[in-house]
Image (cartoon, rainbow, N blue to C red; front, side, top):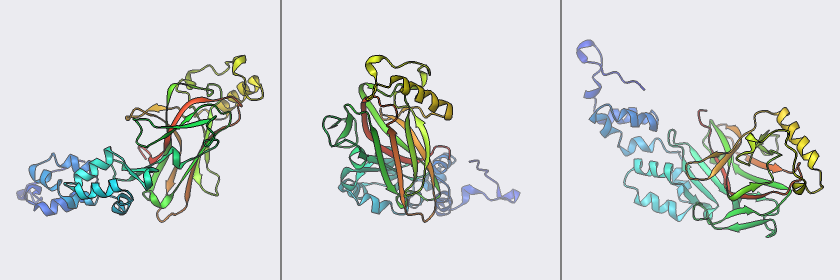
Length: 308
């Protein structure tokens, strides 16, 4: 954002001479990013950019209600030195709410709401069967436990959140957040299918790789005999993989996050003003019949889509 300082002798307005309160009001009508940039213009702007009144405008309207859904959030509200400090804290350090089943944070450049649904808050088929899934604590996770995939041929993970919990008039994307202890196995030859949409309506589906090296694997690679699927149809699994790629070349690949986990986009959706319905997200791999293991699921994150 460019700011031009005009001199009164030229018929313009000397912004340096404006009262700090006026500058603060002007800054509150911009964005967190612009307020930080403008604070570098002059000492008057820097002082105004620190005002609680400015940063209060950058928060979602219901942020206090959200934070009061946990003891951690209540303590954060009580102990925050300034609104700017509270804002930056919520951008960098998500707060657990609803008994630790979700985390809440803010998108730094806009102040819009971000949530992550913990693995325990998701519907994971067979997750209650110790033979197939195991619930384990991981020090690097924000949640008390995560879901470790031991061995399944039917992978199905679903989550949902009310659209009224999200920031309106915003394009959101959902991401599966995961890692592995060693190597993710069983996803080499068949992309998973992800879908994001409103409950009761058909959402947009897309193919996703869960194996970090999946995008680099040869398309016509034949599955080794010892890795046959549940029904022994290793050739069928290979053919489905080729067919999926030809039908949809835009396959989502996992990427490294700043917190050390991996993520892959499941899809995106625009949240309208006043909308209050269930937003549903799913990830499935049930076509290949391959046994799969090695995946550790932390949760599904819903946050504003970058650049949208």
